[in-house]
Structure formats: structure tokens, C-alpha cells
Length: 447
Image (tube, rainbow, N blue to C red; front, side, top):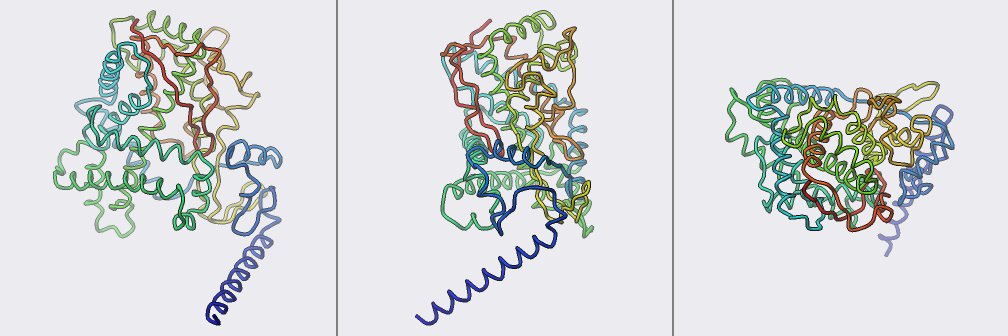
């Protein structure tokens, strides 16, 4: 009894000291921090946020204090970014280009949709399978059959993990990971799914180690393994096994779910706005025709299709808060002080919904990306791939995929929803660290 009482007193004493130290540290730098609501020790401003609408809640805070910053960080990130871009370029000039691989997979997807014979289906897994196979070719050197049980299991894990990040529990887990990982709750299932994905990548790496040919690396993993061998005597190298597994996981996850979710949202928006679908069909028929396979070079001659894709990305706002970055050293930004270790979010969605840049930001309207002559116009406020030094390193690949998949599918099909356009709900299912569209069904009717 006495021992437990002493333990309780000791814990309370430690907690009190930690709170006082936290408060003292905050007061020490208080006048130098960017303006914002007063944070609590440990919890910060979490209790002041609506976790069911995290993005909207943070936007209200930012509007009240008029502040937002984006930072890049890390020698590691810079080296791995350069390595990925170089590897992708090498792959593109090899025996088979990235574009050819995307065209082939788009053809497989068309055949899969044709096999539904116009039945009402959920397109989610069809799209995820196709985009997964494209990125698998790059990182693993091979791809999956659409009926592969391992593929379906991986896709379930990725979709569940992405959706988890958009829930209030997922946001709390991200903010307080060091504590939440030890507590029971739905985050434990999310952790198991992410661990399952990491284990899958690790097995792929082990297989590549056994079959590695230093003279002919067919994929990202082999190229990384060769670089590891070349730098094994460098004590400061960023090319080691843990980095290989996690980098590959990031590429595999982002290359599958972010692009497929964008196109899934795009299909829903086109069914909501059949006039836009008609115009895209007309442009495809006029520029490409019905018998030629779309090429990425056709993009320059198809301003309306390009505008529709951009508007789908803007309206869908898949990553409204961007990716969290951490300040690597004490930093002065304008007249404010950001201590080393401060986590920052770029809040990309703030410009996507800003009337100054888009006349009707709450509406889906491809005219946002067309000039008075009907030609495509760029916008500095279009930032789905982020901006600055840490912009999405898969932007080029994603842009090519979105154009080729959309035009190939629409060349062959028209979309039909079981609901009338006015009844289609295009509001998101969740908005947190990611935007998740609502589940829906549709028919792919041959043209």
C-alpha cells in the first residue's frame, strides 16, 4: 500500500515537473513564435480542433491568425529524391518506356471494364489494381494479375490505411504516435496493416538481393541495392536497408492510392456533370479518334481534357494539408522564430478553394483552367503535388498516368450512374490528412 502510494506521488511529481518545463519553454520563446491560439502542455491545440473536420478546423485557426508556412528538410530526403528521379529517367530510356507501360496497363483496364458488360460496379479496386501495376513495374520490375489474392490484400491494406488517416482517430494517432502506439484502439489495426505492407516490401527486397545483377538493374530496388554496395564504406550514407524498405513503401503506396483515388473522384464528378463528359468525349474523338491509342503528346492538343483533369485534382483536394515537414534547425521566418523540431503543414487546400484564384471555388468547373479562347491556362494556385524543394517527386509520372488512363477509358466508354446527376453527392466522405471520396457505383457503357 505504501509502495503504491509512493509510486503515485513520484509519478505526479514527474508529471508536474514536465508540465512546468513545457510551460517554461513555451514562455521563453512565446513572443517569438508565429501568432496563434495558446497551446496546452503536451496536447498543444488539439482540444481546440474539430477532429472530424480537421482541415476546415485548421483553416479557421489560420484565418483567425493569418499565417501558414511550408518548409523542406533533410540531406536524406534530398539524396533519395535525386536518386528516384535519376532511376525513373533511366527506366524511361530503357528498352520499354514508362509511357508504353502505362498504355499497356490502360488497355488491360479497358478490357476489365469491358468484361463487366455494362453492369453496375464499384470501380475502386479496378483502378487501384491498374495503378498498382504501373508503380510495381518501376519499383519491383514486375506486376500482378488482377485476380491475384496477394494484390487484393495489399490494396485493402493501403485503402484502409489511407482512410484511417482521414479519421479523427487517425489524426490523433499521427499527432501523438509515441503514446498512441502503446494504447488499444483502432490505430492498432492500422499499425498492423502498415506493418503488413512493410513486410511485403521487405520480402520483395530479399528476393531482389538473391537475383541481383549489378550490370542490369531492372527496377528501383535493384538500383538501390547496387548503390548500397557502392557506398558500403561511407559511414554517412543514406543508402541502407531500412531506408530502402521505407522509401519503396512510400513510392508503392503513393503511386497506387493517391492517383487511383484522384481518378475515382474524377469519374464521380464527370457523372455529376455530364456536359463536361460530353465535351471531353468530343475532344477525344476530334484529336485522337476511336482507333488510335492515346499518347502523352496528345495532351498539348487537348486543352479541355487537361482542364477537366486539373479541375478534378483541385476540387478533389486529395491532400488538403500537404505532408508534414519538420524544421531541422532553429529558423527565422519573417519576424517569427520556429524552434528546431517544429512540425509544419503547408495547407495546400487553402489556395485550391480561394476565390482570388478560382472564381467559383466550391463548384466543379473546368473553365478555371481555360482562357477566353478555350486554351489551357496554368495557375500558380494549383498545387496538388505541393510546391518548393519538397514537391511530389512522382508528379511527372502521375500527370502522365492521369491523362493516359482517363483518355483511354473515355475513348472506349461513357459513364452512367444509377442515380440522376442532381442526386449524386460529390462531397467527400472524410477530410483529414487526406480527402476520401464517397463510395459509389457506376456502369461503363461501350461507345
